[in-house]
Image 1 (cartoon, one colour):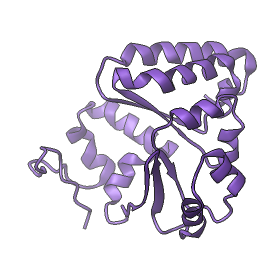
Image 2 (spheres, rainbow, N blue to C red):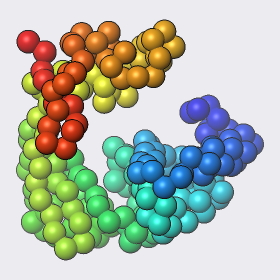
Image 3 (tube, helix red, strand yellow):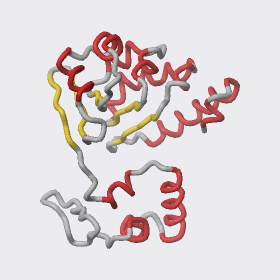
Image 4 (spheres, rainbow, N blue to C red):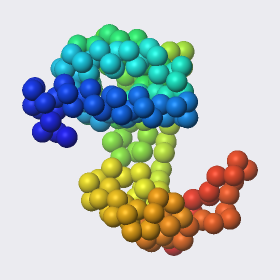
Length: 203
């Protein structure tokens, strides 16, 4: 995929096909479209136009689009940076001791207090700042005691490949591939008040 996005001749038709397939799947079910380091693709006019449209219309289809980047400047330098900032209802900022006020305050509109929090939070604190138009809060998400959850959430190529092989072998039902992937038993019968599985850390 990276090679396709870096090829100007192939990028646009590739994007058009992917958008077509995604649109086919937007059937009203809750959907998240997550784009990791998608700033190169934003150089493509077709991609930028579709993202600008999605930012304004996906909520009506019970879907959302999210971007992730390691560089605030990459996002702000994109051709649709104004739409990204204005149309994004929730932003998540990880600790960054080298954050610059011209990016975070001038670009994303953070207050001086929010900026100070991002600069001062320890990198390995498992804390981050969640910001919405009328409020912000520091959240701590510590999954160190739940390695099986981290395995499932991992986007590492090796983990994704292993899950793909398991699904080919045993099917798509999570209870079938979960034990082999995580090394723990499927939490059959252990559910919370909403009927969702209760994740228990491996011993």
